[in-house]
View 1 (cartoon, rainbow, N blue to C red):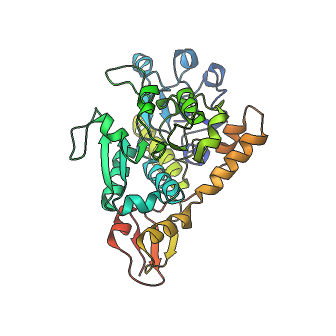
View 2: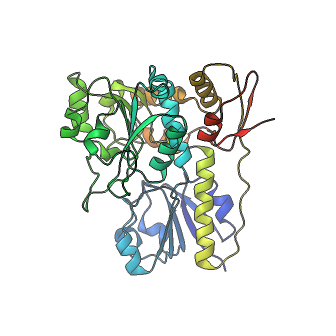
View 3: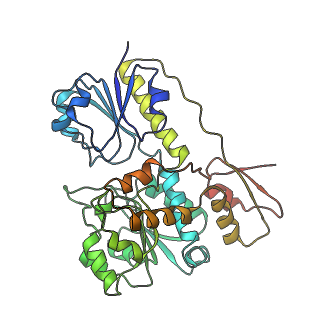
Length: 373
């Protein structure tokens, strides 16, 4: 059985992996149109493509796969009515986002020191695949945590939104929703922002509109806003660049863009499509794991900082983003940074060795490392 596959050109390895099913056509996800899908069987998208009746009304698509988490870009009711299978690569990039958060903390003043020594607390809003993994990683390192997610059972931490907003570091990892009993559109809006102090740090590695960017800018411009690490922005790719100077770290929605996470996402969609169409599954070779070497005799915070820097230079991402935002006025500058994103590895499953001293178990377990003999 030959199947026609149409895929966003920014989904790594889509051609190599899905060519086992049939011809693969790569397209620009933002400009994808109904005409591109008239005789397609499989559609592979990212969050930049709105998948709905307008796009699929005349198509023959039977499988939609999204290489992201979250359904806000997909009209699931319409797909169900049409009998079109929908698959998400949920959790594929969770480790990548967790490591982004820790990489940002490691280069932002002494936040990592404060969290590791118990002087500061971490609040996590949204306990899905990413949030749970961030909580697990932080717990293993002994960090004080509060969480908020009305859709998960009460935990030993907290279910109080206000209490979480009072943490020294507040990290957002919820899906974007505008309906239902707990919408997250502008969850951190003007009222929530009023409670932040200039000593707190707000991280958005979820979706841009979880934070009211206009309200955030007004607080920052009056010197009352929190410190910021922003990876997600409202109205991407046409973001409000005036927020960038207020950020410690600013990046173009790439927290989940590790090479390992991208590979997992593509393979997850392939496996699900093979199951739906009753085809053989052939796994693409996974990337070689990272090799990390640190000085185990150094203070724990420095060992963690050094381990992260072996695989990820988040400052380089920040510098590229600021430079492009300052000089580039083409409408594609934001997406170009994502499209041309360099290879980035994860700590997880990497091999780590100490050139001096013994590495602590909490570091190895927190980041899912393999100790090299």
